Image 1: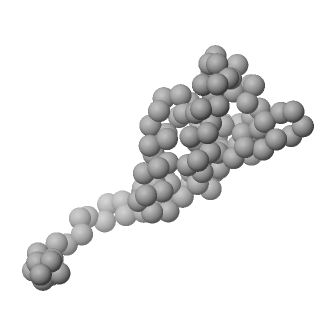
Image 2: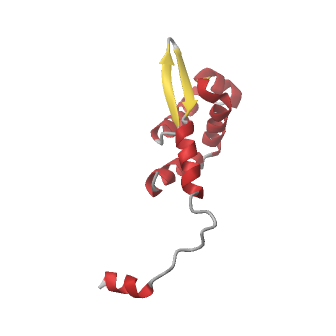
Image 3: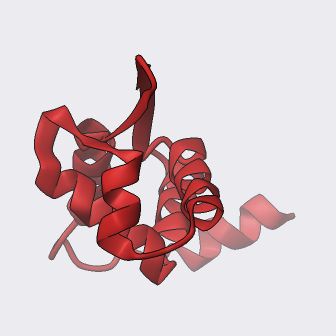
Length: 108
């Protein structure tokens, strides 16, 4: 995980519908949920749901798999765990020291 990937995940989760979808899928566990069930739970049009699922999939937060005629979505728990670890990895360590002289020399 790095700043760019973390920012992408957080940007996609910054939408109320997408975070609702993601939390539903986290709750569903490893089996995930069928798109139709997600749609019925949220009460949104299929095209709107597809749009939001595509955003979550591009960020790597969910995986989609086709099983017969059904499209299943699963939260990528490893990505979620990595994001949380990344955000909290330096918790309570204090600010890094600022070496103003070294920064000025690097700029020269």
